[in-house]
Length: 74
Image (tube, rainbow, N blue to C red):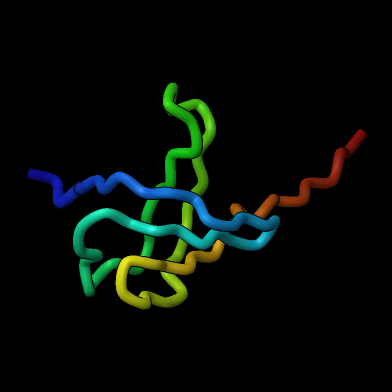
């Protein structure tokens, strides 16, 4: 209903910047941003942006949240 979908995948490579996955099934052409669950319990996950698709392999970059710098005032 909300447009969410899931696919089984195999992580072929991972770095601090991104991930290479082998995905079962087709990858949506309009996929721009997604969440990658890295554990079976769902406690480890990363927000990703799709970099490229080549058949059943996809490359994705991890999206890092911008940390707001706040000055402590006394």
